[in-house]
Image 1 (cartoon, rainbow, N blue to C red):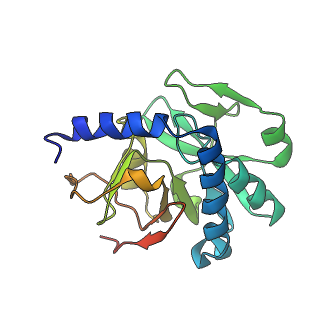
Image 2: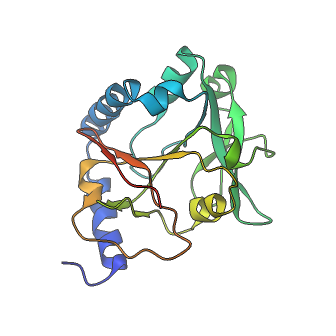
Length: 196
């Protein structure tokens, strides 16, 4: 048992960094295979994704698959004024030509800075560091997804992507502003949670 969330964060971060390139590639393919048959994904037209940066499940194959089935793909940019995320639509050309810049926090963002509110998305595929069996999500610590979702008049379906080692038995603390997941997808399973 971990005494603090910070200790658990540190342990999971270290474990995630140790995942080999081969395992990362294999996990990304397994996640895509499960995602393709998910009804929520099948019926979504506006899909918010992320560009992996810190050992998260790789999203390149998902993004390419979305283009192949003509879904509209959106990536997050941090709006510096309110510290929330906006969603910029990208196309195959921008994606394949790597039209991104590195944000000071380490993630890549589209060069276009003006985006849509999260309420315009049907499906939001989210990165995370830790998730429990209630759908409580702990991210990298910036609170961007929580701040963004709490203001949404229409919340998209929230699907977390994680390696199996990121799903923990321990019930994580949940603050009133925390935005839980609707589902979690790992390389081996899809878990559904009850939306609060």
